[in-house]
Length: 232
Image 1 (cartoon, one colour):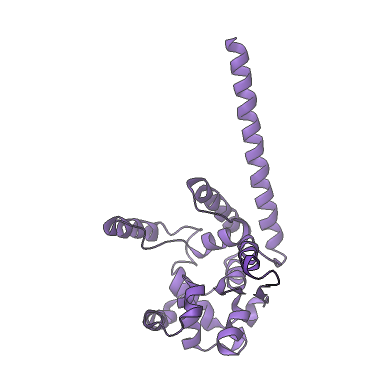
Image 2: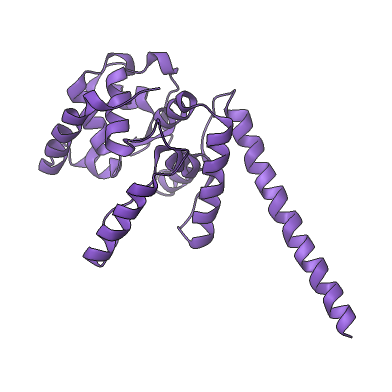
């Protein structure tokens, strides 16, 4: 009897391990592919489109890919300054930043700040959807490691700038530049780039509230930090 229980337990553990391995291989294959080819849409984009079509069945996303060289260096600096100042130097995780965020959240007694790097955000946008959970955060960490192993920092930033959400159905630097300023991503000026970077934490809210005083002041802080941002 005990032998049968052990055998079943071994089969169960083996099946779980096999399923886990296959899932990770599926994620890794996608990352390997996207290192060489541009994504048509991400998991996050698909989820947002589903939500938009609940209100309007004919809704479409506003998304246009643009190569790295055709994105203003000002925007690259602004996004790094705003989202991940240590982007060039870390391997997917800013441990010092995570520690500061935990302390800040504990002090406030609630979650008031994130702490995700650009690589972590890209992992979520590309392959994950749904509510946050411990399991999902663990999977996000594994995908982040895969991204850092497979991709260069330049490719990570190129992908991030092209799949980031910048408003209601607005995705990517090129679309955002045209949506807000009527120019291409290549022609964004420093002040415009800083404002777009400031919108990233709450893009749909700031799309609706473009006169936000907080957005204006945060944009100025980003603008001041941009000269020190290291761009791949």
